[in-house]
Length: 439
Image (cartoon, rainbow, N blue to C red; front, side, top):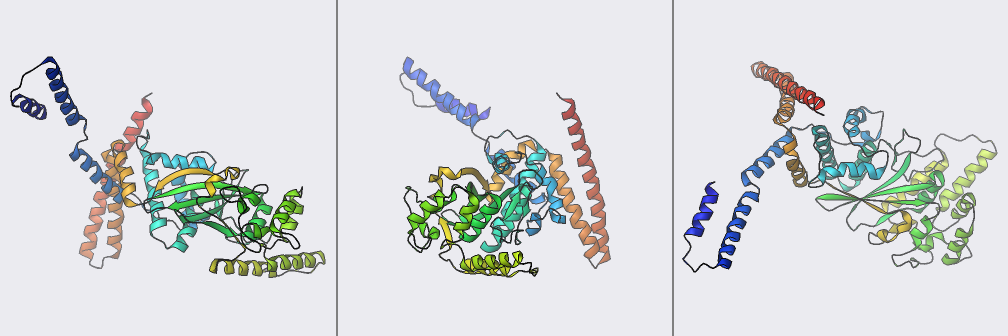
């Protein structure tokens, strides 16, 4: 109460003045305001203690570095992290999964489960490793593996059964009756979304739709958006600007991608939209200027060979052409690529555009999340992870240090670590029993 005494003393020692009823009320209000500020403000030492504890806790948490193996459900790495991702609820939708994970980031959330807090922090640190530890080219590929694990799916990289180079980077929820093809774009905040026109046409023919996940990074957090192309909306999405007017020029991108021989781009688009069935429209789309001549000719040749009963090599000429076409597109921007700007996309309500939220990936932001959660993590958990980390290090030293005296000391410290782990686990089991007994 010394702070309260000081406040009252300051008021008492102020220069004497004439006290009126109004002045008395003002004095009381000033005093109460000062008292409130003193007690309501967060304690700096407590805040610093929580930050320090959060830093220590993050250091001892298990580290899982994402790799392309995360995208393979049969890999050892994927099996190791599956239990971690199983904690993330949200059902079997992309939006549900990401929003469930995002809740830990929201200040004032009511998450109290240590299991969920710890799993979420480990996953956020894994996301940070994706963005921070790889260059621009490899980060996107590793991020595909990360999302494949989060969305219980499979990363795609090979020629599809129909002979198409996959526009989808992963298939989400592969063990369900409704798997979702996803094309991922990892971009800067104002980056343009673009892709192969030929692969888009083939992908929509194969799956009926293509879901796009756009992840935009700003140095601190990653903003995630979703939109969907299907057989009905993709033409408008590629030819309209934010004002609803046709963009592009004859022989170029935008409306020029859909131009047919003997027609203007506008006439071509009107004709394509008038075709009632998708199979017929797909055949016509393969005749547009945006569709690869080489792929179209090779596909026609292969179809003719199959009809004539001619055997095909495992690596068919069509597959070779598709791979070559993709290499050309990735090495230089060409007229056969479609593009949508960052400002344009939110105006397209017909592509089911959604902002799914933001996830932090910088160390400072993840540390803030951990600091807010420390009040729900008891000391035994910190001791448990710290002892586990120490045990791993001491075991490694025992087998790798050449000086056997030092190695034996590491082994003895490892034995002490196991005792710490046993005590921490016993305490945690007791907490679980208490929580189960409490209604």
